[in-house]
Length: 302
Image (tube, rainbow, N blue to C red; front, side, top):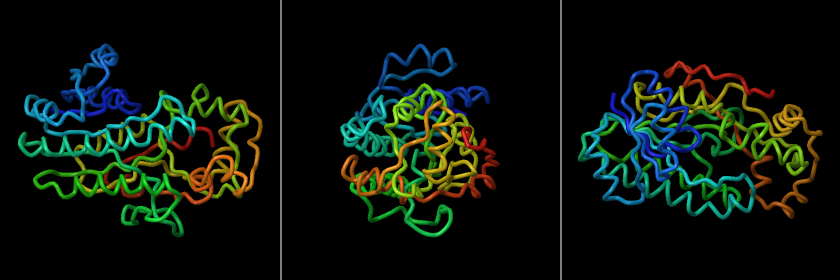
């Protein structure tokens, strides 16, 4: 199969290229960074340097390659995981996701592309009891940045769902961890936890859904052949903040995380930090287990 990955130099791009090349697919890797070209070539992909925000260039690229499937992993996340950098990157990231999605979808129709896979999110589900399946709507009322992010993913999925003539798969990933992510011993979160900068907020009851970056790549490759629709790409043990953060601190050689009240956290870090720690809803991966034969590893530090 001929496959074009948009955003191939991101965290999931490299393991995804390796996985697809290992299955003998022809992989074309769209990246804005010329610095990523040598690594992509070494992995067996054909690099395509271009800007996903340039509609004409995207259309020409898709028309030239004529892929069987396009995988949209476009992001513009900051290099470092800090509240200031996340806030500064938010609008840029949204622009890349929304406009890149529009440009790719517009290019698919004329090139005869059969299948479109889109990076979506598995942690913006509306509140409720238990783990959320794919029928639960995204949250509509939350803290400012959380609400804006949920709105963005709803928009991305709605536009793709409305595009005629393609088989659309929404990959609702959990929080990535593993190589080249923020959540490693050597990564930003490991260092911040060692510096006692990441507290348990309130009761820390917000439930996080995780997925190792390599397992996410396995599921994405499997989604090239699955029935269209949305899939939660998360592991089988979503865990509350007070559980995973305490275990993560132990795994990275840090003291136990400090505890702060919701009021203290809101004053120091804002309402979004409180939402993450106390109101996130975990997601169920039962559909992915059934349809993708997805068998992710347990969260490594629990």
